[in-house]
Length: 209
Image 1 (cartoon, rainbow, N blue to C red):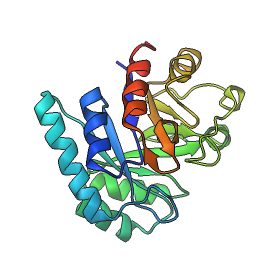
Image 2 (cartoon, rainbow, N blue to C red):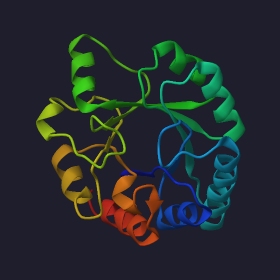
Image 3 (cartoon, helix red, strand yellow):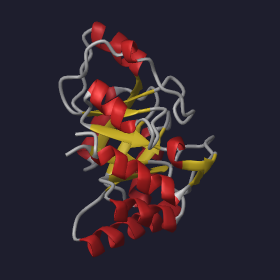
Image 4 (cartoon, rainbow, N blue to C red):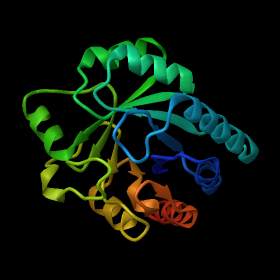
């Protein structure tokens, strides 16, 4: 089944809507500079809301801290304080950061622009972590051109960037990712999640495979 993550959540209502609609993962932005940024205390309360909603539904949900170009100490502190399951590295973090997070017990998602992924793999780079391939400007709502990707990653990867309830099924059919990730595509205005769009996105994604 397609893995579906709803990202940039900041209210219990949005978290509960995502989990109740069947999201596999929910993400919380813990880096500065985004209209979706939350602090670790709020993220921790949202993590609890996600787990409670998942328990009521009789299933589990993955909770993800999204960070960008922060120090390892800051990332580890925030991730522990928020009590998340996984950390999504959305910047230029070196492999040592990912390795240290894995050693600390966190699952790691490595987010890259599609063009950057293509450049790195051409140089022989490979990652032991799950990959999330995004547009060049994360959170902008822009899609990358399908021909930027070249060949799809061999392992699990998720598609992000410019997805919406209207286009997610088509994008999955074209690129065949293992998962999808959405933030701005389920917002009524920048940083404000729309509960109906969250539900519609998950329902549309579930029709894709």
